[in-house]
Length: 126
Image (cartoon, rainbow, N blue to C red; front, top):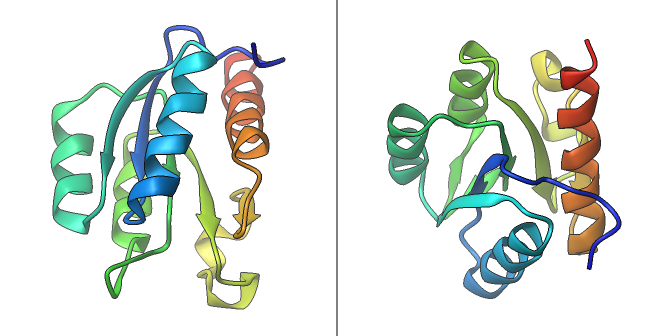
């Protein structure tokens, strides 16, 4: 059992690598999250953001050659917290997202889920 809880949190997973996305969804589910997705494209991510009430999201930055910053913008507009799980370093991330937690690939998926839990908890404590 994970040492953090995402009990009842609706978490969107945006990741185009199937095995990584599936493993992450399983870890989030074990922490009590309701996993939305995983989705592996910008279009599916936009649809999920439009259709679902989300508490948080984990975004891969590059989805089949498309950058996910427009999805991050939409999440920000809707006040949904998120983090990046990416192989890109911080120089690729636009300045408007410099405060967003970034987990570098290869990632420890338990740490990614725990980091999202901390971000959600910090928002809840405000």
